[in-house]
Length: 174
Image (cartoon, rainbow, N blue to C red; front, side, top):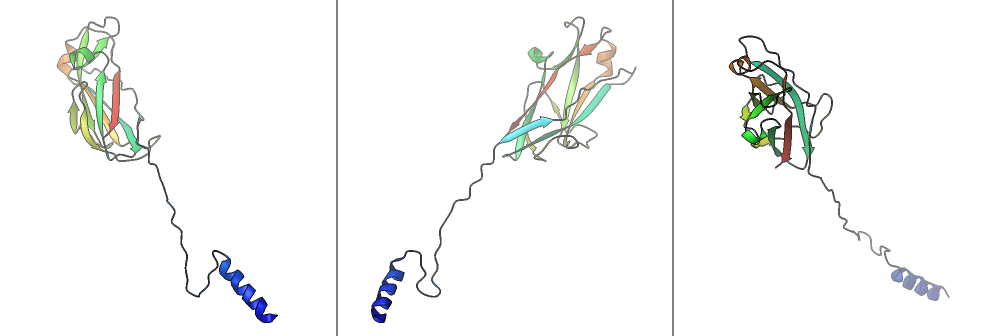
């Protein structure tokens, strides 16, 4: 009876899948680990720029802001003037009479601590090849700077009044 029981147990053990028969035998399974990194870009922390007209000096201002995102290493940036779009230049329009305009320039630096623009923009023209410096944006995460300037000669020779423009900042992942 013992030999019959041993034979039956040996056959049962050999028939059960996944049972390790010999010492040192191994088993393995492969799995896939997947991650989808979205291409996402954001521009944030832009504030209005109020310029002051002081006789004999350019009316200049700047604003630090943030470009962030994931899934790209470089981005392009473009500046568009609502008042100057048809003329391919940046223009401030007189609020009371939009036919009266004053030209201004736009500069850009991919460094929030910059004191001067690293490049100057033409209205509606892309500035490519800017390195993404951060993945997040929000309060305290500024990594770029916008500069605007109205030459003293331009504003001093303009008709008096309030002038304004909506400047659109567009960023595109490259």
